Image: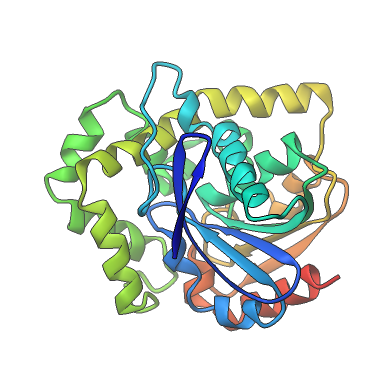
Length: 288
């Protein structure tokens, strides 16, 4: 484990393995520990870089602002790009889950020369989620609107029972609606950072950015016809969040020219619910 100063933001990360560089970016409400079930296999083929996103885990907590810029996926992607360059990696493969996948596709759009291959796990682009926010989808991802409410309303409600909120969120997004898929040490890691009020606030800022500045950035790319240049693999849980409505491959086909992928038997947390099937899709794609 190490902490690296990335232009004023200390990023906590783990590194290991041997081979071409592979950046793995976690999502909400987790940390880099979410990769623990697939990292050993990936480390046999790749040099792994597993950071905690700004505000999450043990990384620095950026100051909030009215425009939520520090928590925009563009700003987070830029910070992780500094991390990779400080580690000596100018070009690399990239896998992101949940919020980390949003940071990842933003990086691929903003810095196409740096991303060789991109895999996004159980998401659709932020713009598309807001566009399809009908009654059924809103009930499925109620947290998008709740966490994006002005501070300190969601922060105070979550902090009043942070462990219960975290456990409910994790369990309710799995296929079997339980915590059985999550390792004890990983859960301990999630609970530790989610017990800190300033980190709860940071994760809310992440979602406020997702309801404002991130949507603007996505819209600008759509209007400009800007697409992901790297080959893109979309993987989603068969009962996860991204599979609702239009198929994910149809959606990602509007954002990238070279798209492949499919579902795995899981809910939202594909890395922990079904690591074997996920690896069966990731490895052939990443090794090309």
